[in-house]
Image (cartoon, rainbow, N blue to C red; front, side):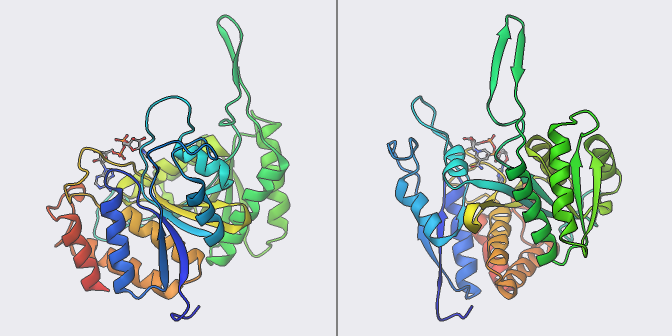
Length: 337
Ligand code: NAD
């Protein structure tokens, strides 16, 4: 894509530290000449009856129309009669896969320096279907739903991702030895898709064994695909391997190829408005958005500038043990571009 025709992308700065770290992204994108024109949408102060939430219909339409967006953290207001913001986004945009790249940041020391994993989590069903009830007093039941359609869809995405990003292997994570029907169907779907990608190695790993292997030697894995609950847990485990949620980007993939990137952390009300937040996770999320758009040159340039700034160690925010402000850290990234 050429620099002369800007791509429109939706931007939700979000709440708390959201606007401050979104400002970093806008500045870095401007300085790197990224051909993106942001369409900014804020969370409303009243419930929109068309979405039953504080997110406006227009903001959702903006993501649908643009097909790409970046979302800062959102604090769901407390009170009855509305849907949570993240649930509204997930349902209305049919965000079926959550993708989290986890790689070691050079110069930021953690237990391992060779982590390079992608977790892909099914995001619409499984244990999180919300179908729970009491059978009789003292006995409750929760239904885990696995469908062929949703399993094929996420498996397809995982293999497509592996191929597009030059990855070698996809591991399906499961507990099919116990959850024979549900996880069994999930695996069956993964196998079907694997057959269409003979160039990508495919393996199946039981979730408990997977946890042990990840903690002992994360380099054993490449791309991991899994049902909802396992994905929730494993993706946080992987974020912990590289230094925590403040550094971890993610991207949600929706029906029709929508990509909505977001940082994994929340709105950090304790440091909001103080120019203290670390914008790395949101910046790296914005990088995943650029990769989705196949703007790899821009993505590499920005990612390298972020990593060099952190590796150099002169400018780091407080969460990484430094004393830089959000704006000084951002300026250092710009200087590295
Ligand atoms: P949080 O992630 O906001 O904060 C946890 C701790 O990490 C805090 O001490 C905070 O200062 C720190 N932290 C988080 N991000 C940081 C950053 N970029 N730089 C420096 N420090 C950072 O989690 P919480 O306090 O449990 O939640 C606060 C609010 O965020 C709640 O309203 C919650 O609902 C919302 N939330 C939203 C999302 C989302 O939009 N995806 C995710 C999680 C929480």
